[in-house]
Image (tube, rainbow, N blue to C red; front, side, top):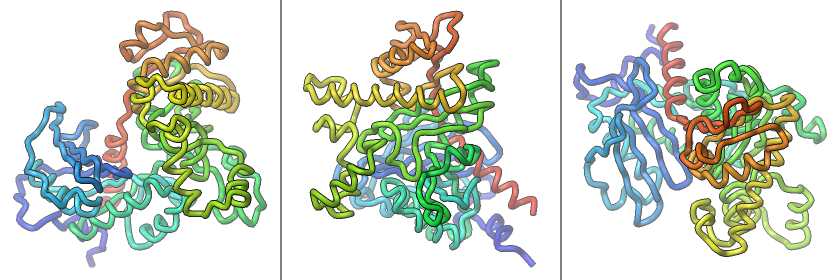
Length: 416
């Protein structure tokens, strides 16, 4: 008897796809107002042969761009007027479009999922039970999880025979020691899964794999990775495994972010409830969408906008972002017993030289040294020769990690 898994593998993504079509794995990364999608060769490789970015979803300014393996623009079909109104509408148009434009036979789809909870320490095949478990985690990642679940549902509906693989941002931090995962609450609460999880795991997974080529012998030492973007966190690695991270039970914890406050006194939250009378819905909206750089500056959540502004509140927001990053880097270094290298990644980490410089200056007490000229041109190696603690910039590649994990799960199914 054919198993459901093997039957799914035998099914074509769509009827009529020619046998000579290139076999591909599809990766999907759904954000709050965007969707990143890519087609990777079924048998390996870290560069997609076709990628797509759909932006400004839910607005009249929605757009889609396609690029080939060399990142050259690929002309795609015109975007229908109603495709940008929602994630669901975009996916229903985009998924068949990608397959046809890439002349590909899609054999599996890998989906980024921010929160896997306590039950998912590695990527897995999606079934109804997995979807239900991820639904229960929506309150812990409201900015991401609903959109990712929508992508999963859309792909399941459009290509019902196609294996869907969930790849979790939390999985990379399964190696964090129990003491660092524990929140000091009563046991009857923590036994229900209330603990620190950590996020940005797909990004950290990619960086950890790049460390030997970039850091040499230091790769197995004590490395702090700063994933700095609209979402921001730190991860402390020892022997390229996660040992400490700044995000916790939800994506609100840790560093100052574009719209989220990071570490906040729980007493302040209680005060907003008890004394100012904010509702739960108002609190969620404020913490996920009105705080961080946007809240402090009153201008924008975009670091580029703030760096160009002369407003005092913009400077305060930037200073706070840097202050908290420096403070938390020191904390992570303490957790892992010191620091041998500091790595920047993410949109701000890779591209904002003044922010990197300010953070590196603040970390001089740790022995970090950097070359201002190298930093100004976003060099991969930022430190002068002989520096005790080196600084680096490594471009992240979450989609390649999703593709790799999808291939691995697919291979496991095929071997059964």
